[in-house]
Length: 448
Image 1 (tube, rainbow, N blue to C red):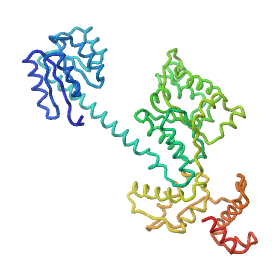
Image 2 (cartoon, helix red, strand yellow):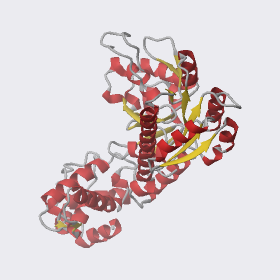
Image 3 (tube, rainbow, N blue to C red):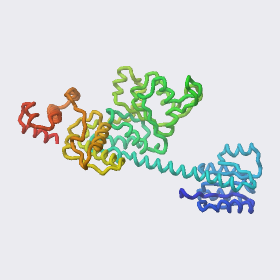
């Protein structure tokens, strides 16, 4: 359907009244009118996909209600306006119950009433088209190979797992340090799956007070507790047919975990203060920067819930393990920030790139984005220099031995730390380590 054109079927057996309706509707050039005098001929032409049908309640071959039912069975998106001489309220209720958009009594002011009703339907169709377009744009936006920037082997592995996650409805558990982009990955999975046209709802369990967590997830009825002034729909219902992201899942109170487990097993929830069971169908994605298995061992997380949620694991690498992805991301952030603020494009100098590559970014992508946006703001010229990059001083080596590495890898890490600390002065670093400068240069070549 052209978003500016409404295709309308007029079904009326009275020839004069049929011509009257067709004439009035035809005055709008955006309406395409087709005329019928009985129900059967209208139903035979439904393959033309009308948007609106004006339907006489009394037809020579069928009752208006029967035509309405068949139309809705074939295509429930078609809006049907019943037109009749009678005003029996029971008939009106019955028609509306079976999906009629409106019921109009034949009278001298029918022209105005009919045109207003069809105009409202047109507005609703245009709104649906806009929503559809927005969803398609969002889906393009979260095409993960366009929005998750990187060429490193570590991020390519993440791409492979996202691709697998989009093919099924399996639960997904996303782990990684703060700032590695867990919610972005969750959105990429949702908007590239068969649930993309339905809601994506994210809830941060760490940000919800303990006594409000159950209401946030499952909803409540009016008067269920002090302060419950009206019914509230919970996140599970909001995400129905779509995806629910439970971020910082490790922070969920242990008492709520049992109710969550039951909801997942039974695929139903009950609002606080209600006895009514609400069926739910939403995909669950969890995210955490903690090791959930360690939380299970400590008794802070239920083992049965852990196995229920674990699903397909996606571990996001920290920025320090993504090599030259740092530069790719930095350039992307520069371009985006300059575009948003109507600034001329800026580039990174070689010294700025060297400084970025030598920093560990404990805050990961989130920290890099902040650093870059500040650098663009501080830079008056067209090239960002290392002095514009305000990085947190690593300070000491307390995290140097937090991982099990080879001796060569530890040596390279030590050299990298000291080069950063002493402003890339290889002679000072060589003196500190009591080795020759040539050794330092050889190790820096290995780093490159």
